[in-house]
Amino acid sequence: MQFKDYYQTLGVARDASADEIKQAYRKLARKYHPDVSKEKDAEARMKEINEANAVLSDPEKRAAYDQLGSHYRPGQEFRPPPGWDAGFEFSGGGFRGGEGADYSDFFAELFGGLGRTSRSGGYRSQGEDHHAKVLLDLEDAFTGATRQVSLRVPGLDERGRMSLATRTLNVRIPKGVREGQVIRLAGQGSPGPGRAGDLLLEVAFRPHPRFRVEGRDLHLTLPVAPWEAALGAVVEVDLPGGPVKVRIPDNSQSGRQLRVRGKGIPGEPAGDLLLSLQVVLPPADTPRARELYEAMARDLGFKARQAG
Image 1 (cartoon, rainbow, N blue to C red):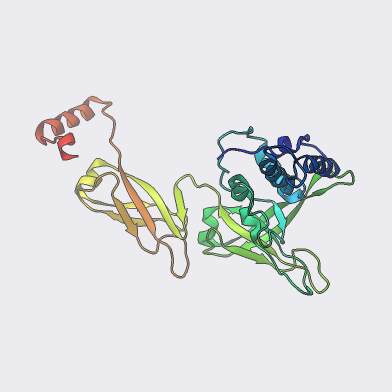
Image 2 (image 1 turned 90 degrees about the vertical axis):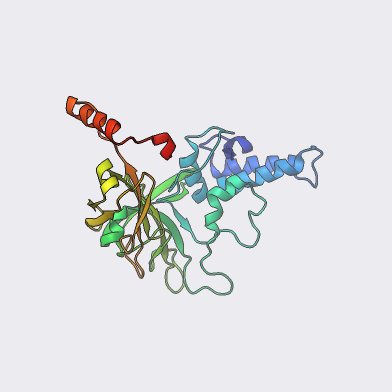
């Protein structure tokens, strides 16, 4: 998938005001609308123009796109990094019906998740819900915590140019929270005639240096010494919830998978810990180490390529 430069599509500068974007869109629409245009690629161009306008005319989408887009060039191979949209507060509406269905895969990859609607139809006694993605540390899921979360709220200043306000909230993180779970903060959305809407915080975890998370399961590559793999051993594994002892079966090889039930993220039921063994060889960097390796080579008669 290639990165799309929406500013280039509309022919406006990155600091263009809302009025400048609107004027550029109208000018291009008059030229490429299929009902009036004689350009041979009018329909395809109009789809691109509509897509660019859908992002740049919306302060919330534009702010998130601007943060991401500053690191990419048009046509560059692109995959959005995990959590790229974290910390932006979006209002509820999202897309209704088939709106946005004709847009590109690039658009769907970035903004497809904004299809979450709050409440629709009829009289609304409650204000619109807002939503945001927040990045948490994996350790918080094991203990629970209260964390200070700062959200960027996009808008327009008095000159119609992009601006970002920041609001900070103290959020209680429940023990056992999992990625994709939503924490609801009552009354923190848009004001309404009855009461304010809610703020829905979607949880994502920051990349962890040791663990990979799937649901409530934790995946870990576990280094073991050759004698631990060959003879079997009981080793201690440090987890966010505290150390756990794991039995390594004898005659284990690199890549062997072990499952320790109930030692993943807490919950009902708790997740599992999945270990991938990696046999790590000590270096032959001393005379004694070389002597031991030479003895193994001589006495074991092991043919690695035949064994493989």
